[in-house]
Image (tube, rainbow, N blue to C red; front, side, top):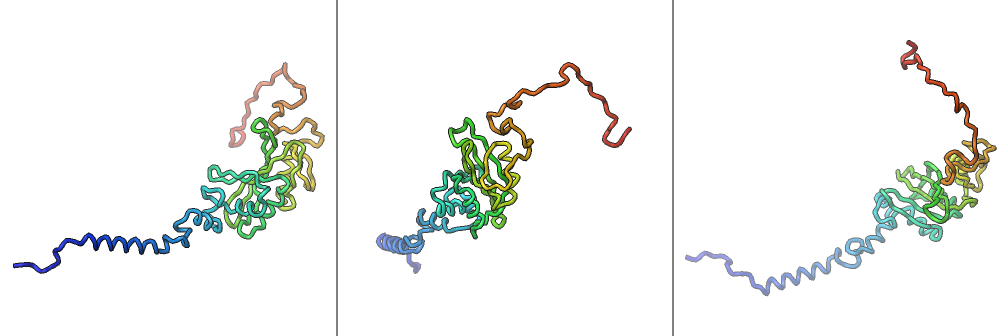
Length: 241
């Protein structure tokens, strides 16, 4: 007694036809077309990221998608010297002539809003490169985006860099300290004078790498023949005993 049912093996010709139809449908899918470049095309994906202002772009491995760098390349393309991404920190080197303009642009840009100067200092690059000798470093912070950016510019000895006091009043004492310790001149500073050393200090700038450990001039040493022993105190930290 026979059992009804389809027990015939599949037709190879039918399988080939089904596979061809599947390939045709896949090739016509929107995910595989050129119109869907952000999905299937690497260059299209990069272009899509360049229009993105999300927080992820601030920390992307590709530094070219960093929002601040994108804005500066579009606005000040000739002012950018270098851009470095290291240990999840971004540093942009710019020309000194556009130092204040670039900081103002980053501060006032509606998407960036890098509106806080956290710190300003300098680094003596002596024996690390030929020139420029000094790097002026500004640590910037965006309060709305909660992200940081390091901005650098290089100057040689005797050259000046525009002051950031017109943008952030907190740069006043920071630039005075750089002037006192490194001798860097900040053009447009309202009161550029020494802050840590005396006004009549004439022995150079102590944070320069070629500055002697004990200064440029000899100084007298007192009490070299007589020593004073240590006197034990009654103070125990809890009051007199």
